[in-house]
Every structure is written in C-alpha cells, then in structure tokens.
Length: 123
Image 1 (tube, rainbow, N blue to C red):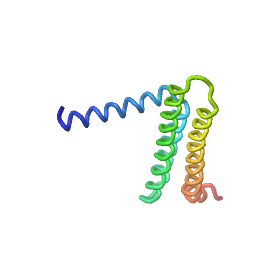
Image 2 (image 1 turned 120 degrees about the horizontal axis):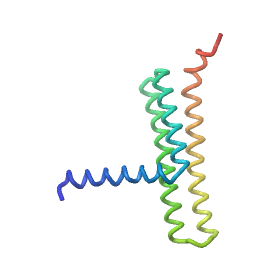
Image 3 (image 1 turned 120 degrees about the vertical axis):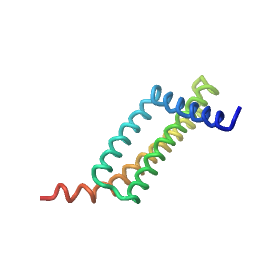
C-alpha cells in the first residue's frame, strides 16, 4: 500500500474512533458541546492569538484525556469483566485525570473570559 493510502487509512480509523466516542460516551459528547460553545464565544469576543492558543490547548487536553480514559475503561473491562478492586482503582484514577483537566479548563476559561465579559456587563 502506498504512503498516501496508509495515511488515508490512518485518518479513517482516527475519525471512526471519534465517532465511536461520540456515540458511546456521554461525557465526551458533553465536553465536545461545551468546547463548541466556548469556541463560538471566543470568536464573538475577539480573542487574540495567545488567548486562542491557550483555549485550544486546554480544550484539546480535556478531550484527549477523555479519550484516553475511555480506552483505559474499555481495556480494563475486557481484562477484568468481574468486579476487581485494582480494576476499579485504575478506572477511578483515569477519571480523576479527566476531572483535573476539566478543572484546569474551567480556571483557564475564567482567566480568559472574565476580562472580555466584565467590561460588557459594567454599567
């Protein structure tokens, strides 16, 4: 297979993975919708290049960790279908990573959006 064919196939698999996460993972859908709303708000408020960079980094950080969490949960479920304290701990720790990333995104969002919104709501 040609290099172009392999690259095309890789993108096809990656987009299939995103589609699978969208269909099967409510948290990924929630994070994606929030990201879309935040991106529209940033465009309306006229974010500069640095603000866009920070915003995109934290959004992608959350989405990437959500995907990794999903992968880990599926692997743990395959490896340990019965209830197992170590399997539960692995899943809980992975979920904690997503939580930390979401908190970071909220803090970054507040730092980026408050200075833009505050002047608009002042009398």
